[in-house]
Structures are given as C-alpha cells and as structure tokens.
View 1 (cartoon, helix red, strand yellow):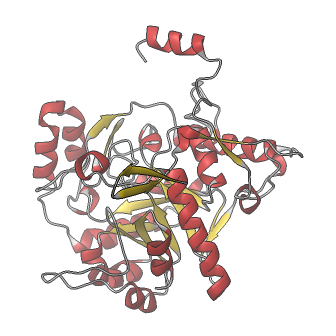
View 2: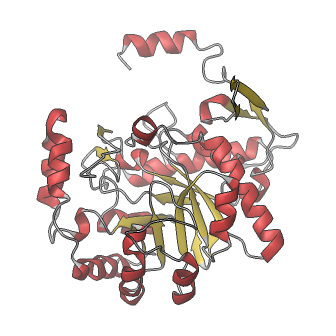
Length: 386
C-alpha cells in the first residue's frame, strides 16, 4: 500500500521488527524435533547464525569458538586484526577512550596499513582451531585479495559495503565484477549490503551464494542518520527473499538471504526468519560475549571513515559466554540470551519443522505487540533507569 507524501511523491509502507508479530500455527511441534541447520554452498552450519565482521566482535579466538558451536564468524580484513600483529593493546585503548575522543582515536588507529601477511596468518590461525573460516573485505580490495584468501584456506569470502550493487559508476575506480570474482574462486562469495528486490536479483545473477540484507539497522551504525538511507528489516528481508525465490525458479541456484543487523532480542531473530531469511548476521549481541574482541564494546565498520564516519562506539557490557548467548542458560529476561532456543521455540509454536517452513509463517502488523498489557514492566524498567 502506498501513501501520499506530497503532490509529487508517494511511498510504500515498510516495516521493522517492532511493528510485526508472528501468528501461532494450527499445529505445534516439540522444539527438540526442529531442524535449524543450513548449508551455504557446501559450508554446513548446525545453526543459521553468523557473527558480523566487526572488530568489537570477531577475532581469531571468537571465530574458533563460533565454529565450535555450529555457527560462522566473519573476520574483518580491513580491521585491526590485519593491521596490527598484536591488536590487544589497540583494542584496550578503544575500550578505555572517553566518548568524546573515541572517534578521533579510531580514525588514527585505522590509518595503519593492512598487512597482506596478516591476512593469511589470521585465516590459518582460525583454520587450525578446527572450524570454518569466513573473511570480509571492501569491494575495492576484493579482486586483489581473493587469491590470498583462497590460498590461505578460507571457506568463504564476504564482500561488504554500506550499499552494494552489481553495477557501479565511477571515473576514478575500476568496477568490481562480481561475475568475474565468483568465476575465479572455488569458495562461495557472499555480497552485501542490499535492501531491495531488483538489486538483489541482479547480484544473485552474478553467481554469489549469499546476500547480506540491511542498510543501517545495526546498533553501532549511524548510516540512517548520516545519509538518510535504509529500509526497515522486515520489508527489506521479505523483498530480497522474493528475489531469491524468483532466482531459484529461474536458474535452479539457491542464494542464501542473510538478514544483517537490527536484531537485539530472540523475537527479532525469529521475525527475520519468518520474513524470509535463511540465516542471520548479528553484531552487538555477540559483542556482549566474554569471547568478543571488544571487551564489552562495539563499533560500526564505517566508524573510522576519515571523511564521513557512519558509526559510533557503544557499550554493550559483557552478559555471558558465547555459548550462553546462543544456547543458554539465560541469565537475563530480556531475550538477548539463548537465541537458538528462542528460534526453536518460536518455530515450534508456529508449527514449523524447518527454516523453510518457518518462512511461510503468517505475520500481522502489530505495533502494540511489545507494549500491550505491559504497563508494570515499562514502569519497572523506567524506575531501574533502563
């Protein structure tokens, strides 16, 4: 449904996680009998969770632990892990910096050059831990780094920017050809980020195996405020899922739709899958894990941009181990722990045995879903300063 913004502009209504709810199914299923595993072009994951390629989340230790637990962590090749032989002192300084100084400090820290030798070293360290290894690079460096990444043994290459398209116009930079990139690699390429049907379909036609969905929803991202660009995640995921389904019917090739960002609680995660996601990529919630690199801090990938920062450092605190955040037991009642348990429970309530079944779950527009009948909860949280 379109609404009129003015005499010359109409707009389609879009929805975020807080505006919708899932309708229970006519049949319920025991959560222990539900299957949530997925395959990303041969990479088999026991749980459909990816950790975002952010320096406050993923380092070698975190990536190894995420793999042990059945998920996939993505290491940021443009971050501190590949700029500094020992990034621990740098991460400590970011954690300790006062808010008024942290962005300038980040810009200074990220001026250090990327060391190609560290790219291979970090990949080898993760692989020695026994799990899958995914790495992320900006589009401008993807073609050059592809060979290094594959030779070092990475299982997946993620090419990630604020917004990615299959067609880019520039007089000063050579256009990255995703078709050429995917054809020269034997490992899957995941591209992002994207929020609309037509762009998603064009990217899928280039041979990518996964698509990251989301522009600006992350807790530490300020893109929506700085640029005014973005689409709420329920609508963005649904539109890109439609492109996936049409691409599958047309080509026989399945491209995984991965909702990236904006999920704070288990309920957000379940709504992402019901909107059409095959997997989710999470940053801030994982940044609160004991194993996370940021020591209870999280910052956006574009925070250190020297010209137009589009992120900020936020304090997530440390809630528990990564295993507790994924599988419980939960020590808090806000839904930010035992995410896999929340997903399986929601699927059971909605009568969905698999993720593909869950994608067919009925949804309703329900802006009162989190506030209806919750007066005491709201008053108590206000009283606690939450």
